[in-house]
Length: 502
Image 1 (tube, helix red, strand yellow):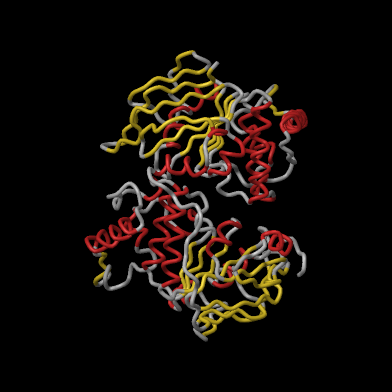
Image 2 (image 1 turned 30 degrees about the horizontal axis):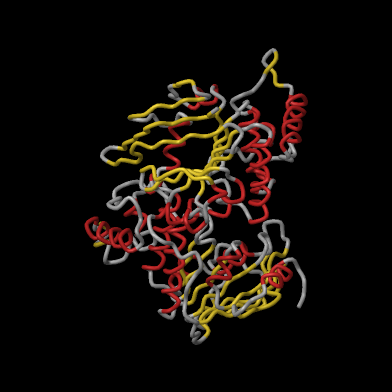
């Protein structure tokens, strides 16, 4: 019996066709992956199933009964729950309060929180989703927040769970844990739709996979019978090189020097402890480490978003610590930040306005305080074309209307076009499909080959190993060892990341 059948789904946004005659059939108690490039229409298809959008054409069947879902409330009533890519949690409320928000069960106008917490713990134990109901959201890890989102839909009685890019903000360890949770949910009788572009996760968790490309249905395959390489070519429409290809680096003089850096967090705890390293022109220096070992504080210190207690950061022999982000940019350092929404974009601005953030007063874009919109549009068009940001011709659209992966490609285009001497790339391919990952990797290597210095900070070990010329292993706020990326032993690297010594 099919848990869901979507037949001939078509959706337009103005003149733009987001989906054209797309089919999806999900078996009961199975994990069905939905694979496609950023902007292919995956989230749009699921937003139709969840009632956030209405299809212009097509039919939907739940448990083989035809339904007309016009709102999320109707979707929930039909046993559908959606775990969104960007968490929808209230930081100041507790775990339990977030789980029941909008679905409170009251008696005489009051909520029995003791009973509610007991119900939550019962569900969490059943599915292996261990949480602490009385903790505030602001005080828990990202992985725990993911579990809260899953519990929210289970608490509402969902039998079909839609996961929209669920690992985009998770560490590798948290991702492995989540894949286990998804498999256990299916084993318990739940039906899962997994929206992703990560081929390893599909092979780990899914039984079937439907591929869509640029809004068109490409096909549905048995995951056990297909290779990652074949899935990638179905998704992108061409052969994709999964391994990074690059020439050997030719590093020149030191451009960024960090010495004896001590940085504290908000509670006065030392997060960087006399950290040292040097970055040279024509080199990609990768920071490898388990999340929480000082990577965040290092980036914030270099970019003057966090005060340095002692030590120095020199850019071209000029000290830049404890100055300002504007001064850091003037010294030819640009950053692709980890959180594109918080620090990379102004979501309610248009694409073209985001293109000139920090450059709005330059003569090319402003004359006597008046913005030159024709020039701004031309500049934005260059970024869009150079980095294949989709849909093309999106200069006037609000940037929040672009898919996450296209937002990321746009940010990288903007920072590369700023022509920095040092480009800091933090999680540059998080939430990005395999075709865009290939494009971004080539772009970073091209900048290196032009003599630029790249500081790469990533939790993806494959990315660190594939791109880096030199790898600095960070553990408890120190670079504990530097390795040249020539026949590196991954076991040794993992050992060092866990605090081992050579």
